[in-house]
Length: 315
Image (cartoon, rainbow, N blue to C red; front, side, top):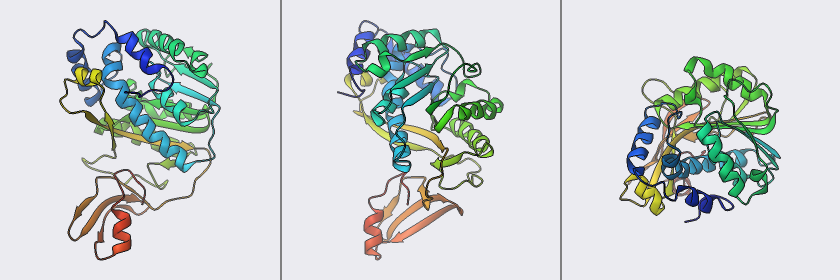
């Protein structure tokens, strides 16, 4: 099952060959770490490649497709992939923007930095083969030059919540066109994105997605802003997850910040649409805050259009 660009499917499979012993147990432990909002410092790289890389790649693809839709003029030449791990987010960025000619990968953990170097060399993609791999932390990036797009995927959990505003502001200074943040779709992940959003607005960034406005976030209480994407599971992925169904739903939360403002669109759908005989009900977030909007089936044209909408779409 082809998933990653270039020769990366084959490169991942080759690296995993002979490393499958105990994979299901290590993958289960890894999933619990992500769900609990813990860091990835102790993550087993084989478990990550088998169980997490496909889902991370799918979430990044979903977010970057939306970023490109909102900013179609964005044709980045350079990418700074922060907390790159083996390079998964950068693979998704390369699929979205083949214009990328330079990728800088920042990864502190030696096991993942070593793995990234191996996979870059075997990728068959010149931009990755020539990637600049920097073995340092998010807090020690003074010598890292700016890039058109800065991408930090599933990495803010490495930081305390209190330190996120300073770190995210530093990342924003290195983004000449866009900063993209992606976190697990958990309450802890959303708390990190919420803190980042406030800091970026204060720094003058234009929040393009998922928010449709730059006002205060209306999400309160036990609710949190998150989305899902469904991906097919390969045989290896099913083995690693001890799964019986051939697909997985990855929950994620994210933020796209741009240097240039984009036209505002009314609302974002924050939950699966609820459909019955009387119509469709949508949970929406817009400039006016949170609302539930019912579209009656008797309004045939609007109802027909609404039936095509999904969780995460803009209305």
